[in-house]
Length: 190
Length: 349
Image 1 (cartoon, chains in turn purple, cyan):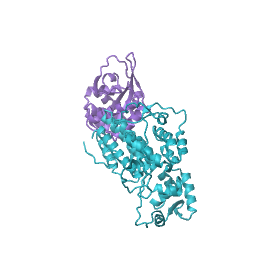
Image 2: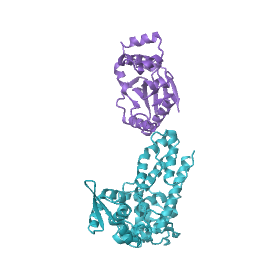
Image 3: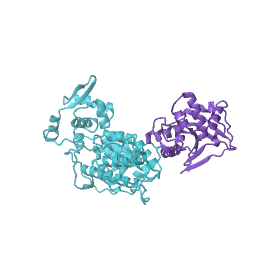
Image 4: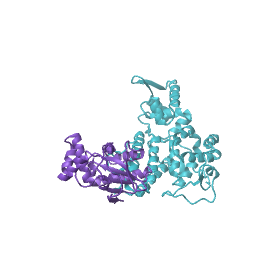
């Protein structure tokens, strides 16, 4: 299990080193879920896994695209396997199960609200921010009923205005992916 | 313990061990120590060459020994043990064989065949044969030996002194050198040695234990059984296992009854030495890495194979580091395990 921001950072740093060993020079991931809530300090609970929404690909012109990463590419899968073995994590501790969100839609302007961290030079991870986590948790709660998603949603303490925005965005799921207006908060680790 | 310190201690332990084993066989001309286990000369030779690159005097004493006693080496078995090992194992053997093909007492032709085992397409870049314990090559020699240069190694010429003695076959450790003159070099003497040191064995397990093909072992066992002195019995519903009367055989071999005879302990040296060589390879690949995590990850990758090889050797080994040891503790656990295998006290930290 992954518990706490420090361990998640340790695991992602290890993943970065393993990616370098696989010859991967630069991989940028968009992640959501319990691990994000821990890293951002929004909740404090253990989580089994890190959920990848997509690979983030930036063009030379600054256009951001999100790419489906399911199934995980061999290099990432192998790097994740080794990290999972080294840290005694569950087999699918790194997975792309939420990739269906790319089809059902992400909140508009999401990439402008992510918190991005660099793990060495080979791995960049954008963590979906609180505002968008509320959107996604509300969607998951509506979809699955009472579950850990409801607990997370309550822990996020959404104000009424945020909840209403989240409810409305369920009807218009398409997101804008242009770079303009995107100012992510970036943190570098090694 | 730092990776550098661990590497030094491991290498020193291995070299001390190798010196001792070769001394038992008659190398170096000093007093012969004794051991209770059988020595496997082919496995010892294959893996000694790897480590003796860090100890030139040992390397040359091994050459001296081979000049005197090389006629007892089972070349087919030697090649089988070396097969599948990464270079430079084969090149080290063929270099030696080139030298022995005109210096060995006894059958020089067999060494000539081994010397030509590598095809002409196998062109290796030249490298200095001997290395410091830190892994740096010695200075380029002014004069080189052609027998080694042909196979990619540069070393100064050796002046053979005749310092090795003939192997003394009368001890537990050197029993192979009693059985080979009696039964011939090859699978027969290996099978008999296995049966002398085990209650019984079926062909597959004997083949694995002695490092000879299943077919070769099976054929030899069938022929030995026809003498009536090697016996068969059923194990379970379908397996035939072979055995012999250890009392009668030990009386014949050493003139003592089985309770008084110094029956050697069987060790699967092929497995054990392969495990030690794999440890050396993985330590060499990690000791200059600055990343504690990556060192621990690579060591962890190797532990299953290494511990399996040690487990197959027959020696009692310390507990293997568990899978749930965190990355920041794995390196020290690995060191503790390995130093426990080679019988060296470990300091923590």
